[in-house]
Image (cartoon, rainbow, N blue to C red):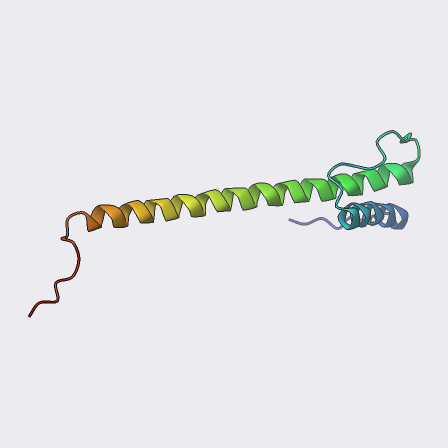
Length: 96
């Protein structure tokens, strides 16, 4: 069940700014680590950057898992075809 939550306009703006900044600069970690987080806007931007990083990491894990599954399937198919071909002769016989 979804709750209706109101998000402060300034919070949303700062969060999105941090998210977009991380996305545009392709940041792997938040940019403002050493800045005092007493400033709530800066803290909110950090949160947006961290969210972008979390989503990218999650996508990479998903892509890696799908790639591994695809490779495993291909290897099984190749091994299956090789074992089926061993029982047959050298190929087709075109003699009539």
